[in-house]
Every structure is written in C-alpha cells, then in structure tokens.
Image (cartoon, rainbow, N blue to C red):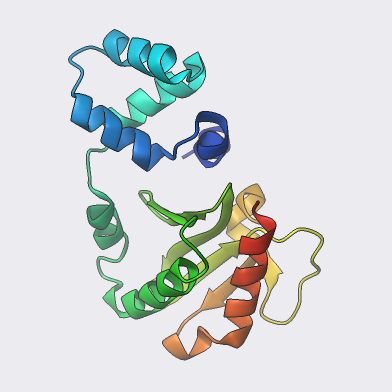
Length: 180
C-alpha cells in the first residue's frame, strides 16, 4: 500500500467520522449494485468528500474479508505471535471505549481520535509495535519508527509475551493519551 493511501485511511475517522472498517460494514449492509449509487449515498447522506467516498468504495470492493479473517491471515505461519498480539489488544482495550481496532491486510491500526499505534507481525518471531508519540526521544527499547516511516514516530520490537511489560504499557498509554 502506498503512503498516500495509508495516510488517507489513517485520516478517515477524523475526516469522515468513521473508520474504513465502519464504512465497509455500512456499504456491505447497503449492498449497492453500482459505484455511482454508493458515491451518491456517501456524499449526499454522509457528507463524505469525493476522494474519500471513492477510496471507501474501492477498498470495500477490493477486500471483503472480515476483521478476524484479516488478523488470521496476518498470523498464518506466525501463530506463536498471537498471544503477544492478543495481550497488546487487551491492553489498549483497557484504555477506554474510544479505542478502535482496525485490522488491515498486513497490520492492525489502533485508533482513538487518530491512529496512535500499529501492530505488525514483522517476522515469524517478532511483532513490531509502532507508536505515535510527539516530542519523544528514543529511549531504551523505544526506537525510531524504522519500517513504519511517517505512519509512526517510534517502534518497539517484541519477540515474547514476557516483553509485553510495564515499559510497553507505559509507551502505549502515552501514545493513547496524545491521540486526542
């Protein structure tokens, strides 16, 4: 996925009021036969701009997989990492009812008002946890964003459940608190 499309998806909740996953569910329920009908619905009834409406429709048609199917596909052959993923999800869900978990093809975005974390099974033995933390120097396990580029400001690599410790929780919480 190119950076411009990823940025558009990341900004979707703020700009349209809903995440891509939420829009996909709405369009799936409506089951429009034609692209133009869906455009008219999104623009007319929801005030979505032309660019966002077109992107929502195209991405809704592109991949009809359910969220759980997307996560299952990410961890195929990497099942040993699932306990780490599940623990990270449990932590962020504990922050509040305003947390949205949005699985994509190769990662899972964690969103409040905007994305504050990204969970990606980087290898068969490691999860990369991307975080958006403003004005924060690298600190111990908190590294530069690496492969996440501008999607995140920092990254923590996690290879075992034991590494999902107080330090990881602290950085996740800080990213969450800044994502208002």
